[in-house]
Length: 227
Length: 249
Image (spheres, each protein chain N blue to C red):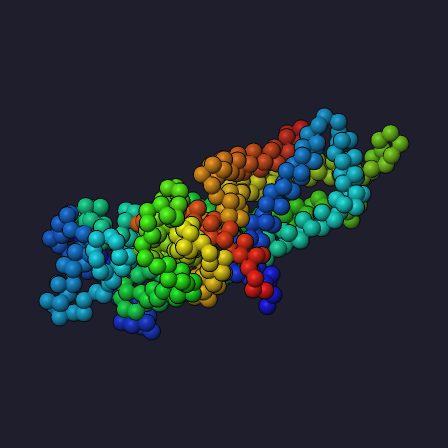
């Protein structure tokens, strides 16, 4: 076994992969949010549609996009492996546990939160990514150039209150996942210092509240605009 | 005080085991938890029953021998060892559930006694300084900054009781292993071998079947010696640095 696979197969190595993929996905959230907030601009989707087309046609972005899928898969697969091994480490559980005395609920339930997020991602990809790429969607023309009208697909989808509720609840789940995951990734990478760690923890909490809240704002605002 | 105890009874490693309920009376609030169990065992002996087996040694909070998962927390509700937990932390009429440490790497020997020799094997795999460091050096011959000395000492206070493993939802031993790696890596005598040590001790930790870390912090919150999470981060740094830098391919 080479030293690389030996390292990555150790419990610490598996955690390293979780941390690195997690941090990449955190970066992705920022980029994704910046793009999607254009849906709220009062231009009937012009900025968003042009942005979506630019992203889809840029080969570098497409490569990063597929990498992103790969990292989501890696993050999910390694969490499944780790969770299975962790369960095996305690074959007989306790009759009475008072876990809330020593740890937060989200830190103990990252697997459940992650599974819910994975379900959300699959629904989200089917609803938008697949529709944009392979579905029959309307076209619009700005300044003589034709674009796919993704904005209309999104705004139509968000007329369904159930869909909006699903998105908002999923973002709440994401918030809890991030509230532990953000700072935890740095700890796993070995970054723990009395100077930086309090800042990283605060930054993580702020990120976990602000980013999912802004994501959740999009379906809420678009629903209210249409009703 | 009158109490109801729900105690895990298990004849041996292969027995299935279950909870037995005992009523106990005349307990003083000033008794330690172990003294309370002594009273229970005297009662049981008088009745000709098998006393409850539990680990204990110094009863001063320094040896790490006592264990017990009490009402859902290792060493009970206070952040201390079970021998330093006093009955004043409970109320008259309470029901107290007492379980052994639960981990694949800590098999039950009998009742509440578990085999913690997995920790010994982790130490044997690298938790030492290979060469004889000689007699006590003259003061300040080897300069060590006070903060580093303090940090190493804090890590070295780990008594290897296993509360971290018991508290962790993954039965992970990382707080213990990281404390041992830290105390040696921080000081000049141990620093020389820190890379190889991290690799060997982590490998042994995995081989023993302990789980991975989810950074819940439960271990530090329950540790009677208040071993910090920063030790685990240091272990990760040492291990990853060792992986990419040691001579062994």
